[in-house]
Length: 181
Image 1: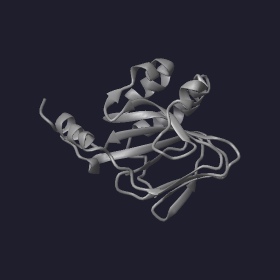
Image 2: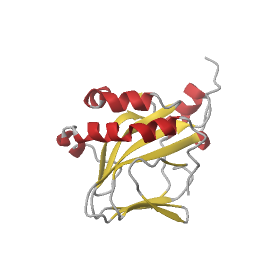
Image 3: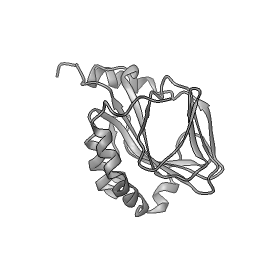
Image 4: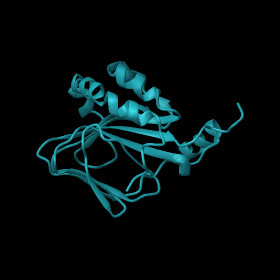
């Protein structure tokens, strides 16, 4: 399903800090969450702290601890919270990025989408909240880091748990940028 999180040293830090991140999320103004739908999927919403390489300062001010933790992930390009309401289903898809982001990856970091990975760090998840990547389906377990290549692997998300599912999303480059600066 996903890449082994062990080669990435930051995954231990995320697994150790997930309750701090969850607690900060729980203190967020729920109106902030309600304003930011993700994609066009009913029941999927969230708050971006970083998006496609840019910092969302107003949102970061609401979640300073989570922002600091995200900034500790080497070569992080995007980070934030994502909520999938009970009964919601994000149909099978491969994430598409706008051409300007692919150009930004190359110009800023000398990287391409093939080097981009997505972290799902479940913060609030109950049985029935699950994700399929390729042919493998896994239940979300709070604090358990999942990593996959969202721009190349078909994936879908289900939430039949009776409760909203909340994760922290982080996109990062798998290697040090090589663009001369």
